[in-house]
Length: 191
Image (tube, rainbow, N blue to C red; front, side, top):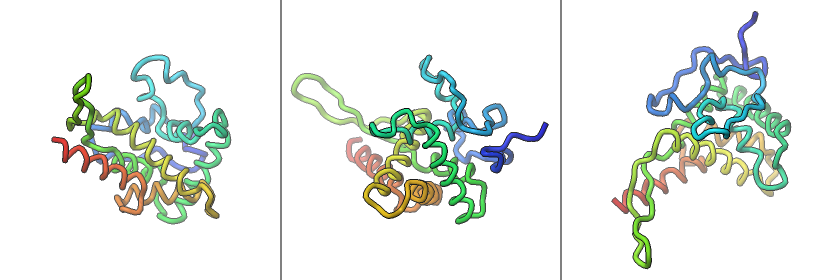
């Protein structure tokens, strides 16, 4: 049997996750390899089950938001496929590796939470768990792509590709990196 490659193009081999803390929550190794990111899995049946959901499928699921796109997973997968083609053309690297780097770079390490109840409430800086870092990173990347594609000539695929590439580089042009820096700056002020 031939090796499993995403969209029959992008290999799951030789992918490395630079941050070991988030490695257990980014499902991309051989066990989670899929031809198409549509497993019909029940990943929200138990608390941390979505950690086993393949990373590309989680991004596809995040794309299906904002009312008019709810449930249109085939559309989301087509957008993702086109974005991966664009990423490959621009960087000449495996788009899966670029996506992993983007997710690792976009997750905030520190956040602030509200402490105190009635009347007097203040914010306190807290560390962010690796699982939540991955969740926030995926959300920020997709939100940035959706925002930049809205009322714009560029398609959502082009915007998603740009967002992923900029986030992987750690560029401040990326919406996800800007938001991450803002979250960490607020947390630092509330230490």
